[in-house]
Amino acid sequence: MSSSKFPRIAVIADAHFHDLYGDYDFEGIEVDGRKMIARRLTDTIRSTRVFNESYHALRGALDDVVTRGIKLVILLGDYSDDGQVGTLSALREILGCYSKDHGLIFIATIGNHDIFGIAGRHHAKRFLNANGTYTTVASDSEFVDEDAEAMVFSDKMYCQGYPEGLQAMPDLGFFAPSDAIHWETPFGNSSDPASRRHKVRSADGLNQYELMDASYLIEPLPNLWLLMIDANVFEPRIGAFSDNDPAAFIDSTDAGWNSMLVHKPFILQWMKDVAKRAKLEGKTLLAFSHYPMIDMMNGTNEDEHSLLGATSSTRRTPSLAVADAVIDTGTSIHFSGHLHVNDTASITNSKGTLTNVGVPSLVAFPPAFKILTIEDNEINVETISLDGLTIDTRINTQYRTEIAVTKKNVGAMLDATSYGEFLSAHVDQLVIHRYLKREWPAKLAQAVKLLTLGDLLVLARSEKAISLDDIVQTLRMDRAHSAMASMGLEGMDTISVLDLLGDWYRLRMGSEMALDWISTKRLVMYRRLIEAYASEGVEGSEARQMFATIFRMMASYMAGLPSRNFSVSLATGQIKIF
Image (tube, rainbow, N blue to C red; front, side, top):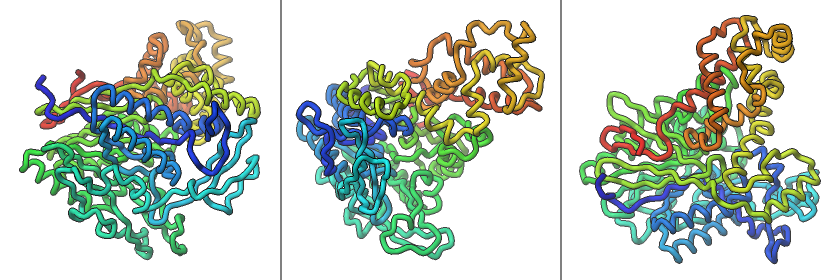
């Protein structure tokens, strides 16, 4: 392997930083002489990310970067909790300290949690009181939370729009750095927000607005071009709205690159021009945006839609037209966040290959960031886990006080001895408190709470047409009346289907990194069930069809491209483990 062509680059996605000791005009909890502003664990177990732990996770990642001697850090959007004024101010100070003390250079894309539309939007968050109750802090003085112990109103909770939300973080590359070798936008070389505007229209064409686009190309090192794309799309809604009404725009969360093709075609044109110039001038070109350009769920989108309907994942899955359009620009490799998954996807057509590297979040399973080493003809991607970070016992003390009040069952989260254990336990709680409630059909969600892996193997063997309405009763009767039905289960009744779903989501989110958290014994059982449902007929059985889909998806999660430590050929797109 040749020596690296450029210094190594760290890529951090979805840090979702919350300032645990910040100023939101709320007194918080006195802890060791400091004012702790802590979110509720009750809210955490329903969220796809943890909140308070982001404070230490970001520092842990940056400390690791410093230890490795890396200077250039890419932030792939959603660097803040929700773009609150107070949060961005604290984040700017922290990043500034790492720049001043360690020479770190930060270059960022914008995410859907960092900014909103033209004028921004209000936020309200629940923060713990010392007695386990909570106070709601809101930017909207008309907001009401009848269950809160108290209400606080603060402008520091407001999320700004374009360009104010960008100007709050002026040192992340959104505006031309004085030391950049080259910097440009799709509109030219000016940093002025007024010169970087584009038009967006509602579906009926009646509502039209001008929004700033925060995309830019930067050359931080000689011959290294980083294409930082603002893939936020705020589509105007149909209807009449007052000035600066945030309801006038559809949230960008589910839009992504599917909407980029419709509302920001000028970005694709610019990308094509940049790629052409990069090739002519001998530049190494890497592309970054918050949203993926390729399906990052290993081709399971159709199965998920048939099983669960229109989930947040299916709504966010890029169409094949996106990859075709990007390949046509000459862009070959792209790094994304947003989905909080560690995965790699690749698509090849007659014009070339596009590889999308999904960078996991710092505040969801599996917590990690990527390090890029660029060789002459390939890029090496190394994944650095934050599993070993320690648990902040001061936060856990507040959680225990809260749980004593709410009586919430949070599983093994408070027994975790490391950050990795905490987030793995968080996945199990998400299954119970979020996914089964919000995304799974009610009958299926109820059934999985009552079944074991042994039951699923019996179901796979059954020739009966079993529905979800009577699945538990039918399987229990079959097993009671037939010794054959329960033969060869070898401990499979000790694993519940809820346990299975926890691992199903770990594999979905972590790909090969999830294998660190699933025992060999369980993997053997899962592969046995995957094989059983793949080989047995499922026609005529509603229950078997659904579980066959679940195991088919699980097999796909286990069989994806390398996603931990691998190399990508910049010429051919070939992916290899190193």
